[in-house]
Structures are given as C-alpha cells and as structure tokens.
Amino acid sequence: MSKFPGLKRYLAAWTGKSGARRDIAATLEAIAEACIEISALVARGPLAGELGAAMGKNEDGDTQKALDLIANDLLLEALHGAPVSCLISEELKAPCPINKGAPLFVATDPLDGSSNIDCNLSVGTIFSILPSRAGGDDSQQDDPCGLLQRGSAQLAAGYVIYGPRTALMLTLGEGTMKFTLDPHTKEFRLTAKVIAVPPDTNEFAINTSNSRQWDGHIRAYVDDCLEGEDGPHGINYNMRWIASLVAECHRIFSRGGIFLYPADIRKGYATGRLRLIYECNPIAFLIENAGGAATTGTQRILDIQPLDIHERVPMIFGSKHEVELVEKYYSGFNPFHERPQLFKNRTLLRN
Image 1 (cartoon, rainbow, N blue to C red):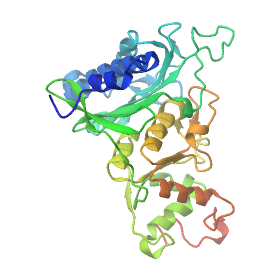
Image 2: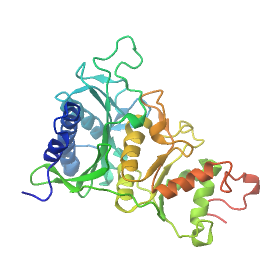
Image 3: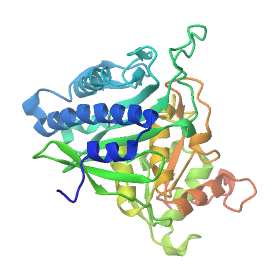
C-alpha cells in the first residue's frame, strides 16, 4: 500500500457514518475528477488547441479565455452527478441550477490566472462548498439556493494548481492539507497532512505598478517594507508578483509571506478586485485553517456578509503577524496610520 493515500480513500475514512460528510466527499470527488481533466488540457498546451484565445467578456467585463469556458463546462458536467443544487461561477452571470433539492452548492473560479495560459505559468481552479437551502425556496427569488452566506459557513474549500506538478490544497474545516496528482494513476494522493503557514515573513506580493493608485495605508506599508532593516520593520523584504492568485497562495503555503490586492482609485477597483464568494472566501478558509490570516485591512474576510454573488472586496492574506501589521496601518489609533501626502517626503521606489 502506498504511503500516500489517495483522495477517495482519505475521504472514505473521514466520512465514517455521517451522511452529511458523504455528500461533501462525493462533491469533492466530482470536483477532483474535473480538475484532473483540466490538468491534462493545461499540460498539453497548444497541442490541445488555442486555450488562451479570447472568447469574449464575463459578467464583470473581464476577458474570458477558451480554457476558462472549457474548465467551467467540465466542472458543471462533473457536478451533475454530485449532491449539488446549483453552481455559481466567475464565468456565469447567474447561478446555474443542477440538482434541485440537493444539500450543497458550489462556488468556483474555474480557471484562476488565465492571463498566464500562453506564458506557461501556473494557473488553478478555486472552489468552495456550502450548505444549500433544501429544495430551494422559490419565495426568495433573489437568493433561491442560499448563496449569499458568509465565508465562515463553508463546509470545505480548496484549489487545484496546475504547475510543474498538479496539487490540490484542501480544507474540511479541520486544518489544511495537500494532495499531489500522480500522473501514472491519475489520482490525487495525500502528500502533506498538516500545512502550517509561518506566522512571520520577510516576503510580500503586490502589483507595484498600481502604487500611484493606492491609498496611504498600503503605500505607507510598502514604503516601509522597502526601507528594509533601516525602516520601522527592521528587516529586509523580498517582493514577488505572479498575477495568479493560486500561485501566490501556493508560495505562501510553501514558505510564508503576505499577498495584498487592495482597493484603489481606478475605475472598477474602488471596492477591491477579487470576488468574495468564489475567490476570497475559499482562500481565506484555507489560510486560516493553516494558521494564517485573511482580511480586507479592516475586516476579517470570512465575516463579510455578501450582497451579490460577484461582489468584489480588498484581499490581504498570509502570515498572521504580517497581516496583523498591515491592519495596524489601517488603524487610526496606531502610529502606522495613513500618512497625508502633504507631509510625505518620498514616494514608492523613489527618494
């Protein structure tokens, strides 16, 4: 017997006699099967067609790539055989009904980082599993499946990253673990049962090309990081940016760090850029179950009450102590609070 148990065997042991857990396990197995197919397509690259070809715009105006739509269809097809009432997806304007009366629903970004497809960089699938209203409630037309739930209600969440190896990061609300896809058996195998994000870090990830658009809280934090050991933090930082949420998150799981995608003054970014229900919530659930933290800067991600299935929020997550430090920059009662530009004698990357 392999020292790396397969996902199905692990879930069977976890399920026990619980019917509710059986439903979650069946849904996870369906998602995993779809992601194995997506992994094969990503690995073939141009041999599988023009996967990075632009195919139009999604509900929020983002460019949809061919693989975005293929991944969405594969997940939707797989979930028809699972106890899932409906699917919400970055690629779908409205919730897609699947099995009326089923106890669960799934929220997903079918292919995060699709702008990197043609660059042969890591992309991924993000997913969240939540309880659904039994049978739906036709009297509540605005939320028939009970989709607008806080992230703290999640029953399971994870992502699959398609890189040099395909890996599944998963939480069932009892810690975070890693499964690696065996290319020979086409099965996810448990390769790390306990993932722990280090509480301290000297590495941050942010798109500095937007620095002129940030508010003073984030600008002050990044400026102080760039001061290195001569600045208020007293340590030298490394800076990273891949433009793939799952890739950034996977690095943090591997060695710690902090990721920042704040709101800014650009059109469409005033309330943040990442989607709460199917990007921020599952990542936050994974990170917190590994000992990290996730916030908007002023509020815990998992405490936010969604108002729309495609709602966007600011997102800051990673090593707990570093996230707490950023929150101090947002606190008006802390010496690191937002600095008025009138009194700044330097700006980012320039003295």
